[in-house]
Image 1 (tube, rainbow, N blue to C red):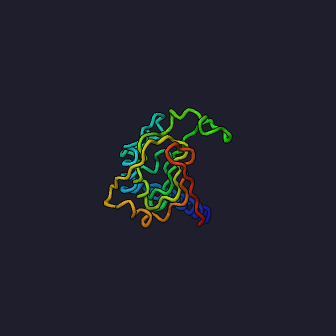
Image 2: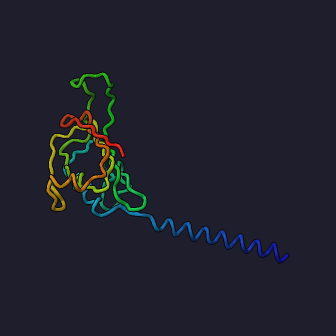
Image 3: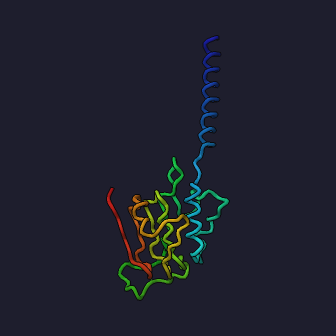
Length: 171
């Protein structure tokens, strides 16, 4: 009888420890880096977003939860930005015969995105940006960006009217 009561106590104690441990882990959730969030909000200022792709991008929300944003689970730094525009364009269509992009991102493409130090994947493909600008939110100069952001491995802006670039690197 004593051994079964001890076993039950041990099981209950183990369950209690498991519940407490999991609740502590949940409360230790990593949040978006403040500098990264400000950089993303600065980018958003010049963008016209007719489809609401960036509608979740509010400072009150954790930017790691924003649509199109992926963060490192440990550091909370932005590692991926996936804001491509879906169209029904066939791969064989001529550039003049592109599908309607009235729902795609347009406006100014701010190069401040390159200030995201841990960004390794950036996909802005098939959007319709009208201008490129660089207004640093830190005091960086444009030629300093390549030295500070060595993590960017994929930049996809293919089929954008303003800029047709696809860059991939191997790591």
